[in-house]
Length: 309
Ligand code: GLY
Image 1 (cartoon, rainbow, N blue to C red):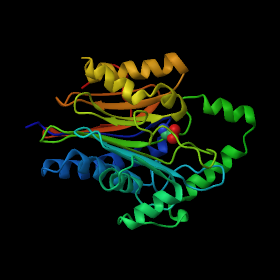
Image 2: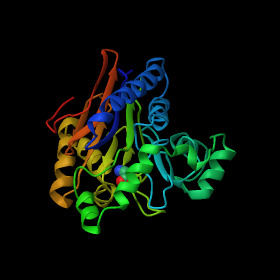
Image 3: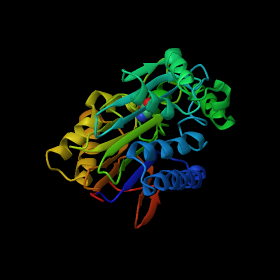
Image 4: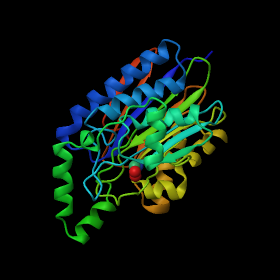
C-alpha cells in the first residue's frame, strides 16, 4: 500500500498577470477532481485523466477549449497517457474534433493494440469508443483569436525572437499520480504552440518526450517549447535519472538545466516516483502547478528550480 499523491501543472511560460487567478482556479479544480478519485481508491490512470479533463475544459489553459490557434486559425490538439505498471501508452495527435483528447488517449491505451493515432483516424476511433466529438469552433475563444491576430502582425524577426524566448506562449497541461496500489501514471494534453504549422505535433503526446511513466523509474509530464524537449527525449531522460537513484526533485531541476544548457530550451517538468517523492522545476517566468496528498492541497504560479518535494 502506498500513500497516494497527485501532482499537476498548467503550463510553464510568461503567464500574464490577468490570467494568474484563472490558472490557479483551474489548478485547484484539477486537483480536486483528481484527488477525489485517487482518495476514493481509483487508479493513478483514472486520477490523471480526471485532473487533465478539468484543465482541458478550463479556458485558461492551452489544452482543449481555449487552446492557442494554429496558423490557419484552428485548434489542433495532442495528448498522451501512460501506465507505469504495464508501460501501456495511448496517444492522439493533430485532432480537431475530440472534446477531451485525454479521454481518447486513455481509450487508445486500453482498447487498441496501438500506441498512437492521429487526425481523422483518431477522431473516428474516439467516436467509436465513446469519446464525444465536437465542432472545432467550440474550442476557439475570442482571447485566442486576438492573440493569433497580434502574433501574425509581427515581423519575421519579432516572431523568431518570441519563439526563442521563455515568454513564448506554450501552456500545456499535465498530471502525474501514485495510487494506493503503488502504481504510477502520467498524462499530458496540449493545443501546442501559437501559430504552429497545421499538422505539427509537439512533445506532449510523444512517448518519453512530454509524458512517460514506469513504476521502476518515475511518472513525468513536461511543458514548454516542444521541439527542444523532443530532441532531448526529456521525459525519459529525467525518469532514467530517477531509476539510477537520483531523487525526483534533483532530477527535475537537472532536466531543466540540461534543456537550457544543451538546446537553450525553456519549459517545465513535474516528476513523481513510486515512493511518492516528487520534483517540480521550470526556467520560464511562471509555471502553474499543484499537489494533492492526504495532508492537503498546495498550488502556485511560480517555483524555483531548487530541489523540492
Ligand atoms: N509543449 C507543447 C508543445 O510544444 O506542443
